[in-house]
Each structure stands twice: as structure tokens, then as C-alpha cells.
Amino acid sequence: MADTAAALTVEEPLDLVRLSLDERIYVKLRGDRELRGRLHAYDQHLNMVLGEVEETITMVDVNDEVQTQSLRSVNRTVPMLFVRGDGVILVSPPSRAA
Image (cartoon, rainbow, N blue to C red; front, side, top):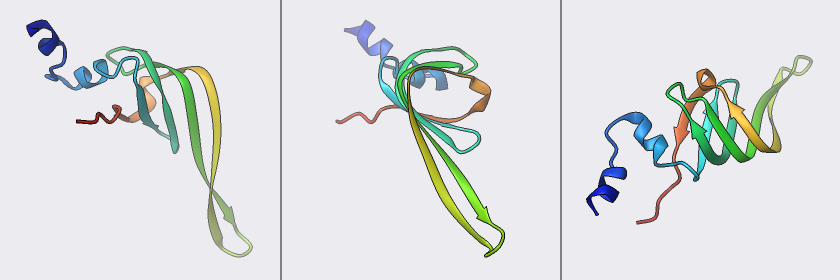
């Protein structure tokens, strides 16, 4: 039982990522990109391998003639994706029901 409790403790920031292995996570990237997918692997640079990925890219379309802006989202699904850690802004673990 003590080994299980030790495996679930969070002492360093990457421990929270370790606890999310094989879980669906949310990743916000530079360039207004968002990913939701299953975390298969990661390293100390936050390079990640995600599976069953849903990617959302948000773009701002500017119409110079009438001086308006509109937001447009593009979605795609990817079976497996390698995410380079230097583009990661935020990683959110899955919500855990109490």
C-alpha cells in the first residue's frame, strides 16, 4: 500500500504529467493550437507522444474593407502525434472525480 501512495504523490511539476500517462489530457500550444489526446510518453523537455488526438486551430480573419475581424476554428483528428516541448504553453491533466 505504501508503494501505491508513493506512486501517486506529486513532488515535482513533471510528476503531475507522469500521473497522466495513458489518460486523456489537454495541451495548449503556441500559435493558438489546442490538443486533446491520450498521453503515451513524454520526456523532461515536455516532448510528448499523444494518441487519438483532436486538434483545434483558432485563426483570426481580418476584412480590411469593412475593418472587421472574425474568429474561425479548424478541427482535425490525428491517430498519433509527436508534440515538441518548446511549443507547449500548458498541460492540463484529466479531471478526476472525487
